[in-house]
Length: 391
Ligand SMILES: *Cc1c(COP(=O)(O)O)cnc(C)c1O
Image 1: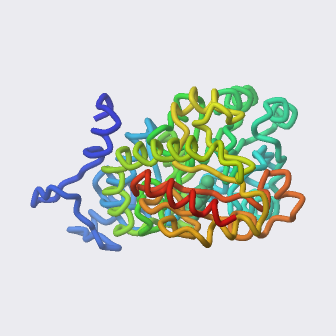
Image 2: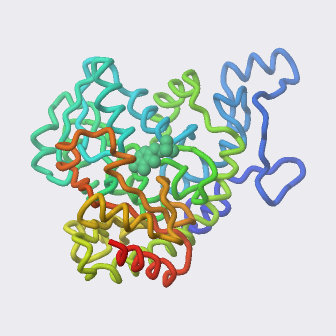
Image 3: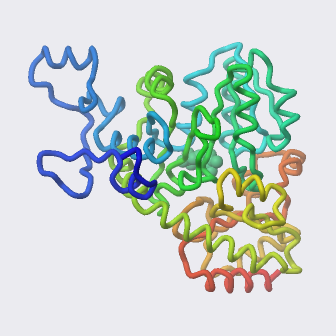
């Protein structure tokens, strides 16, 4: 399957069939597995083979199908699935770090990622230096000979800054640090993060992989050595396992992900172009627009602008008027969904941040994040236009 296109890998990769030869992947809704003999149980606990499972917290056939399919898609040697995207971020970092280690992280992070770096790791004696991820000089100044890992979201939430994976990886690798990239906004469709230098890639499968707002999930991708020797022991004993039912949703989500994400990206570009000249919007942020400060890097790294854009209505009052006037786009906080979703980061996802930090991250009172779904492009543009008219 490795030499096949991404579309083919997403449909067939990792498939395991039972004795019934089912077409659609089976959901193995079981926590445990029966051993024929006591000797067989002993042997499996000593070393489980590829198709041998012990307990669903350690692994499960449906979960394994999802892990193999996403690993094939990402070009990673192996993967470990988790109960949510945050379990993946936490698992990737916590499994490899110990007291006394130094980490460099981009400052522009999803709120819960920031909590792990700022509150959790430091509580256990890990030193974390935050940098402006878009400025290579900041990375260069912060990375030290004893730096163990660097962490960043390759496209930041919600202001859609692009971080240069290749350049940051070169700096990190010069001191032997592990590069961990949260690639949610880039999506597995456009990601080439491992070829560009990332050692570990994490996704919230809740977003584009499910793509239909049904279930939480996450995944950590990396070398077989990292996944089996570092991540697996930590996760199998701490319990953030993906449920087999959710794994099945994600597995089926992968089959249609490329079609969905490409259609959503095209609509996002159409909306960004249609709204760019709106006088009532002070900013239209979309990496696919030539006006975006990191447009060239986005094209080189991803080849596309992604499925999310951000609009600035100028003030919180104006943003709320716009949001409250929307009829097709819903107000919520997921992204990558088939339904278009508008979010006001300053009062929801990033509410916790002090105003000064919001300002540093460009999370202005008027900023609206728009995750573009699968509705008709004209309906979305019309809906947003009448929202803008209500400002
Ligand atoms: C949503 C998100 C997460 C967390 O994923 P969950 O599945 O909600 O736990 C992590 N990183 C980024 C960039 C996200 O957008």
